[in-house]
Image (spheres, helix red, strand yellow):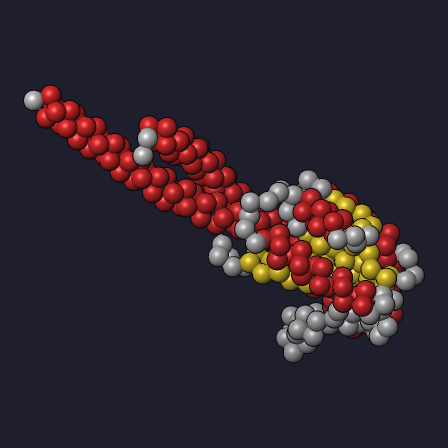
Length: 296
């Protein structure tokens, strides 16, 4: 191997080490943001759960259940699908998993001759659905890394506008649920109409809330009209928080794998370069010895 090839190996090793520094830094940043995202989920969970239980519990009340938000239509004419992806890549299969699940859901609705409105959250969802020719009703960018409650409110306001259209009688959200650092799963949740959970109210418990026995002041329709936007906001906010934590966890794993691969690659290149240098030195020594014998 000549000196030129040895210099090429040196340049490759330097390039790999530079890439390793970047992937290592991204791994550490993702690790720090996971902790913040987990704290955000823990902090918001009681409010989100209480709001969800309140509305699900109201569905048990004979007076309240007449509200359209509890109306389970047998024939779905139109659906709004919210797909939550990331604004950036380099996070393994995180984006591809949620986008494929979202596309499958949209295709199912279209094949059933339903009107389908796609609300894309994140640049990856925007690019994915735009490239495949799907019509998007609204897009939200730059909010998935560190979502705030006003971001969820903006999405909920758009969803509320879609719900005002008479043909839209179903709203679903596709996102990645954060289970643990090593486990995240793509889930599809129905956020409108609200499905009553039979386990919400424990009627056998003395402390259990019997929503069916409540009388409302003001009228139940007025109360639920006020609660509907709040519930949409909290459900979407919870989805954004889970998606953010899942994104950072996936990016940390991907960057750790990239850093380990860079270490191994640099080690192999260094081994090749050392072997090449040894061969070059041996060849030079043989030439010197051969020249000396010829002169003798």
